[in-house]
Length: 448
Image (cartoon, rainbow, N blue to C red; front, side):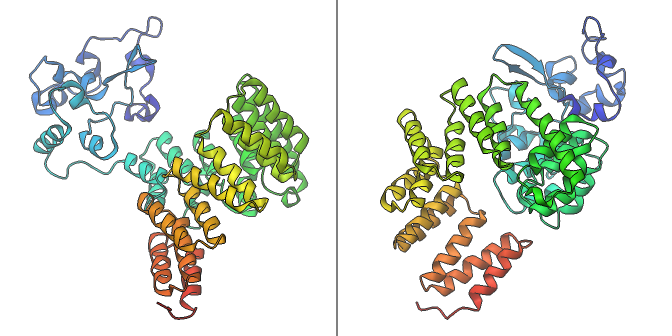
């Protein structure tokens, strides 16, 4: 948290506040903060709005509230933020005010701060943007670009903005990602590489190949992971050589935690992307041997068997997983897709429906279930499924695409156009959304 603080950016170090050998603070109470901050400005009721020498007048109680880590280990928050009770309302984040005034609610804290500083004094906060991005809301894209380009923001915040940019990494974000790739801070460079996860292979290679030779290990291994799905015939000989070295480093990094199943799943995925299928299967099998209860291993190994044309083995694996965890939506979804490939429609619908029921806030599950219903001739039920999912995920583009295309195929041209227009309105920078709208508008008139 200290890396996120204004103090760190100003050049303050640990030893400015702590004696480096004992770790004890160099002065008691507010005296420590007042070695840098003016007492006449900050150690007064006009600043802290509490009686002198009360706990509310303590700098650390407001700006470094304590939280328990590992249940029993109290630590003060070294990000040294300004208390923001309004973010408790918006994001559910804790705040120093009600942590101390336990007999008061959040609205009291919000109203008190507004009384002190005036209505509208709370400035926009990056946490609101990050929440929007994690919910997949379209307005997050431009806001992430703004944060990532803001030199006043701490590097950790800028790197987080870049790492959340994957779904928004279109042409508008490309200059920001490019700048991030050349930043002095390796944390930002690595985050910029990870932002390229979903762009087309050639663009990904063009933008990220230099990161394979980055002087910092963490940037190189991130580049190896991001570039592993790129077809190797797109690489130049020099790029392929650099990728091979970085790939070896990625594997060695995973094996640092080789006793963990997820490390071997990560290695298995890398080998699958590079079409080293025997090594991929061996890695997944190692993961299963380490922890037979790690569900992602079953799903990824079954998907490898799909690639290898061994769906019978994949089905056996997934049914074994469901026998142990009958309410795991990821396994139901994977089995449903497998059954679709085998033209076992009724069984597939049961599995896909169960996945959508178990995880209603995962729009992908609802979308795939709706497509399967439509393929089975149950278009009305498919549309109802998409509508219900959209009420929970109003900004999801895939659900809007499904509603537009299925309504068009059902002859409801006006509804199809309305959903396509909503898609364009929410995602104006998506050329596929605009193309879908124009395609539907060029179709036949509404038969309703």
